[in-house]
Length: 497
Image (cartoon, rainbow, N blue to C red; front, side, top):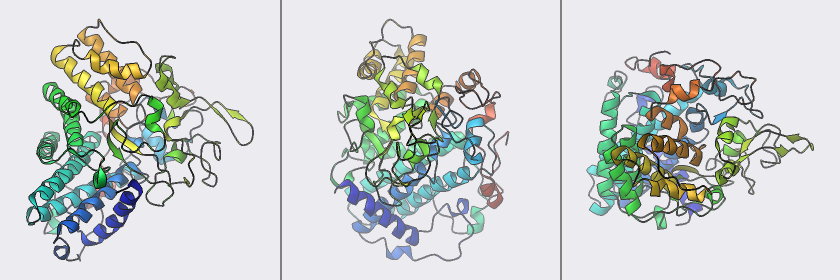
């Protein structure tokens, strides 16, 4: 099955599944629902379940698109990007609040993203329930169960890292009023469920990386990688190292020879891909808005397709990340330092090359640039990090040095355990600065306040990384959306909001 057909199929099935499914998390999405269709009439055959599972991938994709604005929660709050950099449109309050840490519970993008995450969870819950009672072939039941548990675990992993404890929903509420009384579960409880889901998934899934009709779908390598990252986040370094090594030992992945090739057109499912979110060029609802969101002001028709309007520069690279690269580091080319506009004026506005898309048909929301959840480079660096914590750097050099070699940098050697830790932290930043990882990495390594508060600048400083005043402990998490708390009073607010 080719990629374009697969994504079109996901979109059509998402619409179908939206009609037949009553989300088990309805209370977190919208007002009470008094009617539902008879979905029992749908879940009969293996084809029915295939359609249902594929449909959830369409909903999962929304977490990373305009509906979700994932980059606002991750890259934007870090020291890597800012709307206040030259070329960024700092005007929109709902975007600037993420950059300057003035978020409120009423910020629109928070509730939209929360809804997207719980919509995925609800649909996974519904299909898992029907799947368990079905009599389809066991191998298909196992594969679908592994996929659904991994998608559900991923949604919860993002929720718990962004909001802390959240309502843990694993099935539907028969009484809608009971749903509105469900409060937040603890962080520990959320992680326990995530680990349970992923441990189960790794035993059920097969290794079918991007082959046939499985292209873009969850497989064993994805489940092991996600589980490893969960263990790393929880500072369980021995188990993290074990899981990352399992991914390496699958012998399915490798680094692409050229770093810039990673982000070129036509790289879906490449050898470095562990998990990608696919988008389709030129089809409304199946593409993304990355090019127009990331490109700087005044770059219309130069860095974006004609007719898409003025780009926003909502995610502009800071001088801080640009200056962090060694001049010999080939990854620095991900950041361009300027462009000449249609008016003939040269603008020294930095922008992210990775999401420039000048392919035919890539208007606003129509880009086919895909989003990497995990690359093999991430696996290598995170394995090196975990291995160093377990036994020191001696056996970890080979993994970090593979990544450095591609970047044109010399091998590391002779470091202490503490020095290697700092080196791998820096390498993780430089390898994937614009892929939604930096903020999570700062939080999980307990460096958020130290790093961000060492870089305070005024908003008119071209090197700004966002905040002009010191951020506090509560800023590590987002506020619980006001709309959610209004509908579900048992869901309490995070401190500081």
